[in-house]
Length: 211
Image 1 (cartoon, rainbow, N blue to C red):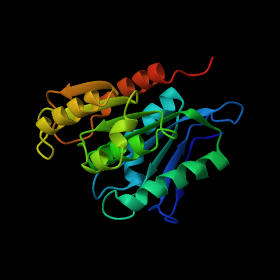
Image 2 (image 1 turned 90 degrees about the vertical axis):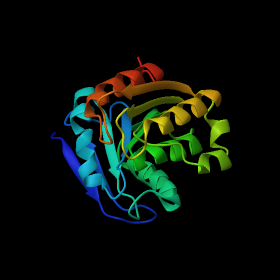
Image 3 (image 1 turned 120 degrees about the horizontal axis):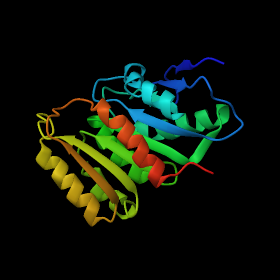
Image 4 (image 1 turned 135 degrees about the vertical axis):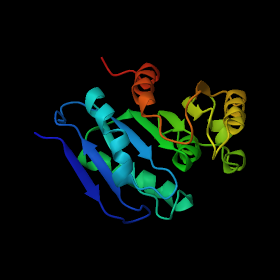
């Protein structure tokens, strides 16, 4: 078997998505899944590559959806659930080990969608995003209790100043989330690929592989 990148074009409520399937994938056991959301005006085809090396090394299926519009919105929430359902029909997904992560707007909406659907997403790892006001209105804060969240932000972020990350951190801690906060002193508004292995070891602790 060889590793495959599967590309699916837009349909339903999603803007298409790219899937990475490791070479050693087989259906004899359930596989953990990383769902990675690109930043504003990005796309899943390109963003997939920020995670491929780490997914391959750690043995994860990986999907990177593309937003319907120029960035994430309400319709994409339904689309995300459709994509996970599509993957479940084709691959053996470990339902208790689905990690949602994203960059910038993708990080912001990792919190929005992830807290809205704790029955789907086991843990959240938003990078360089902010806390969206919609989460105060839709009950997300109540659902944040005990949700494992790995929050990464750059101290030099020019788009979302680090003060916003502090507000996000304090809001989530107050809501009872199981929060790990990582502030990177040198990082500006860009994807911290060096954090990927740390995110995956953290995820293995909060959602351990089955014996």
